[in-house]
Amino acid sequence: MAQLKITQTKSYIGSKQNHRDTLRSLGLKRLHDSVVKEDRPEIRGMVHTVRHLVTVEEVD
Image 1: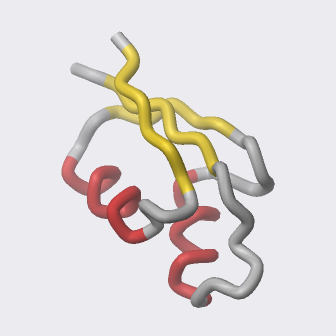
Image 2: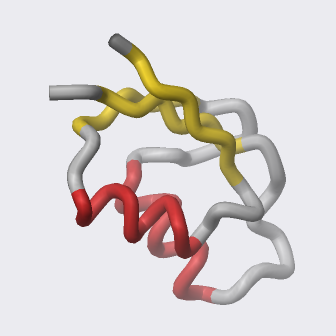
Image 3: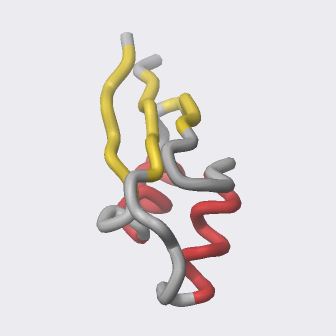
């Protein structure tokens, strides 16, 4: 299955609590943190919620 590399590129300061919780659920704690997750609909939905704070790359 394909995987996604998710990197936090912007600070969550000033954002909604829901966005902060979503970043934490993805495993992102601070700026420039990266995680690799499976490409599943649940993860895509979480990334969509915080799309303005992260960048996403597909990893083979």
